[in-house]
Image (cartoon, rainbow, N blue to C red; front, side, top):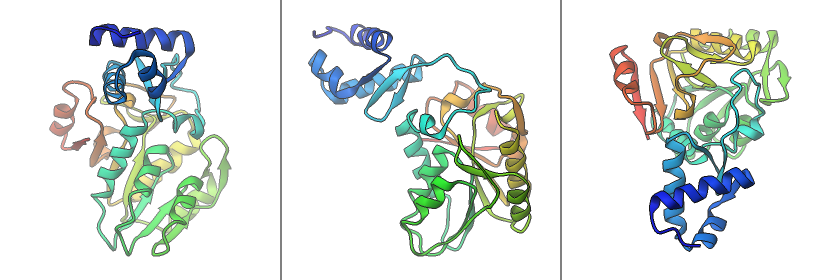
Length: 258
């Protein structure tokens, strides 16, 4: 099978997703006779049109979205993998040696942690067990894992103990993960305990840098976290909705797209 045009090729990919639920770049390349580079470009374009979700090595059918669902971190790690990697790399460029930084729990903030190898002297706070484990790869950092109750879905710490420990720290650069974002409603999340901890993180931060891919825009979840004006910078991918960057910059928010 060798589609004669990009339109036919992308239609074939969508039909495969409808039938199978998930496809790999390698299988699509073998089936169509088209190079893996071209298939990856097709998947990127289809994702920008919100017709599928990218996964590591392929794509999956876009599920019916429930913004109030508390999705597990294992599932989140399957989505928009390349975008998160690029966002994490760009976020790390906003860090200087000697900084105190806070890494909120999430798959995009995990990518920030994976791009810290060039630094020699950082103090890092986090409520994410995944991020704390990742930071064990570095021997040169002072790492604090906030205590508290462990949430199974996010594998992060929350609750009164986490809030109590966080009260001891301030004036850090906060890299904040985001579940849902809109100009009207700001940042929101499905979980109340995560929201309360995020609110204190923002309150005590010197700079708030929100890191999230473009699929989170123009959405609202169950619990309000923060208004748009509480964010200093947003780092996202180039599929950000048309006109959104200009609106954010008009509010005084720095926007970086990767």
